[in-house]
Length: 315
Image 1 (cartoon, one colour):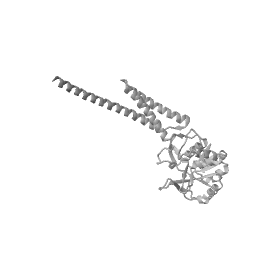
Image 2: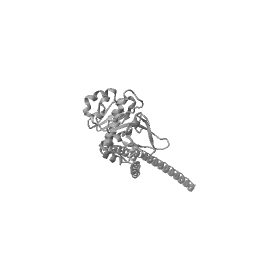
Image 3: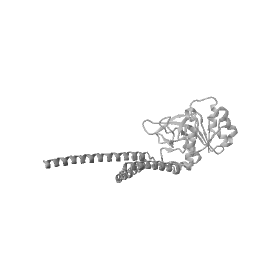
Image 4: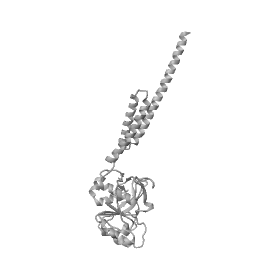
């Protein structure tokens, strides 16, 4: 179970999570500028064990590496605090967030873990090691039906015991600048997406995506079978029959993809197959149409030749 609550205020500083004995604390807040009473906040962070502190990273222009872009101004004062990237791997702010990047390689060969990965490692290093052996640059987030407790700073004093031995994620739950589109919500806070990502890693319920070459192989085999059926059928209602076969195959393809996704967490990109089935039959129609036209022209020419030959003999 994971718990997330809003950015701490002065009122809640004396109830910081290190006093509630949580298992892990992920602080998804970047304090860019100093403010009043920050000394109390910094002291609380220094005394908080198993803390993960948020940073943002930016891609280097010359290579596929990253560097830290933004971090809390007091980060250099901290010792033995793990820094983790809160970035989401999306090309635009309106893009649906389905995936996360486990870590980010720096120019000097080091890796900055993602916020979810670093938080999960403090919970179970063994699970994270097993997860990293998958070796995927991007992983899908499993947005299964889960309920995460949300505790506001005002409620913390009365509900502190609920944090005992739990993973605690601290962040803004209703910040309009930190709301993102996900497959299950049109406006989900970043802290909740991190919670789903942590749950994905620790639960072991990963999605398995077929390699694109495998997807293309399935597409070519499907297209080959359809075209062979089209060439073998030689009856008058061939066009109607092929359309029925096409619709049936398209339906079965969608149902098969749904079955593997829901029952086995396997993602098969059937868009290639759907495209090949559609254009394969279209190509078959063109072939049949061209052969029909060519045959008609050939027969017409032969008929003209035969007519001319008969006229010559008659004369």
